[in-house]
Amino acid sequence: MSTIPSAPAATSSSGGAKTSLSLRKNGKNWHAPRPAFRPTAHLTSYAKRLSLRTASQATKAKEKEMKEEKEAERQTRIQAIKDKRAAKAERERFEKMAETMHRKRVERVRRREKRNKALKS
Image (cartoon, rainbow, N blue to C red; front, side):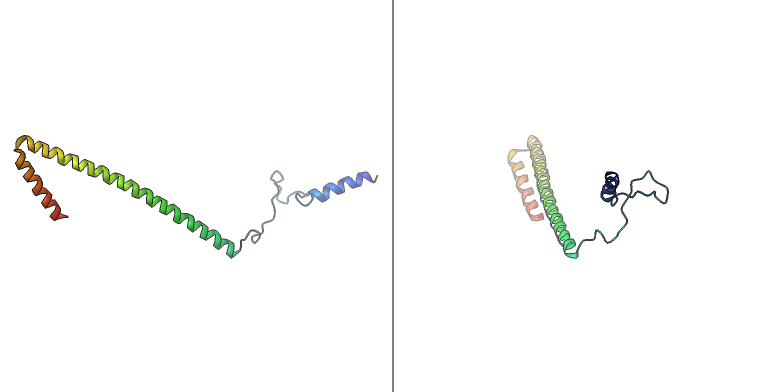
């Protein structure tokens, strides 16, 4: 008889803390049992929150810097493409003028436009 009572005592001591043997009061016995709600159980200290905040701010600053660098590279590529297109259009325009006008007059017009462009900017 000594072996029979010792076996339930061992199971009740190890399993009794995690699961309750009694039925739920609301009758939802098919749900898994949950621990009691303790709002102060998982609070972090101010120092830990502060360190986490500073770490996240540093990460965000680094991400922002990387995004700005990427955008700057993108803008330089876009500007280079625009400059190329403008130069090509100007070259084609002067070639078209050269077909109808004399070469020296085209060069004179080009120099004049260059002066005007320098004065504007």
